Image (cartoon, rainbow, N blue to C red; front, side):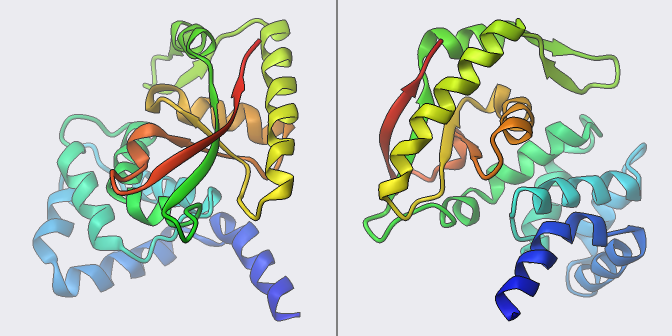
Amino acid sequence: MVTHLTKIIQDYAPDLLGRQEVQRLIDGVKENYPKVVDEVMTTEGFELGTLVNILKNLLSEGISIKDLLSIFESIADQCKKTQNVSILTAAVRKRLARTIAYKYVSYEKTIKVISLDRTLEDLLVSGLKYHDDGETSLNIEPDIAKKMLNSIAEKISKFATTSAVPLVLCGSQIRWDLKKIVSRFIPGVSVISFDEIPDEFNTENLGIISV
């Protein structure tokens, strides 16, 4: 019962987090680290809603937001350049790389992955579309997307004999948009970028995704 309740809370954590809850988190960090909080929250154009959406993005992928100091510091490094939620979320994920990697690492400090072949990765990067609001999307042909998803579904079967979470490894430039596509059609698969794996961890490639 407790396990089931914990799973429900994890699944709905992004929906449970609103402006009031985030404001309480801000107040808690500000007691000990007022300068870093002020640097973020007083930046021109940066709004509370932006921080709410960054934290929701992290929670939606099962990433803990306990290390709020690191989250604020990474946002502080970037928020004067951009207030784009996707870009700021990526910056936070890079700062939290060790926390993210520990979700997938084995006792041998190895992370099992499947990865895109170079041709497919280049194809996705070339199809990356930038919108006026700073967000991005992957502009790829439906037939290519179908073949890619079929290849992912085939390759993740190799995780069945392991205790590892099915994990796709790709470049940071396309990670967020690839995650949105994959999670829509193949639930339970995580997507991580190369710069989110600390140097002290190794990767074991279980398969190459191709079209």
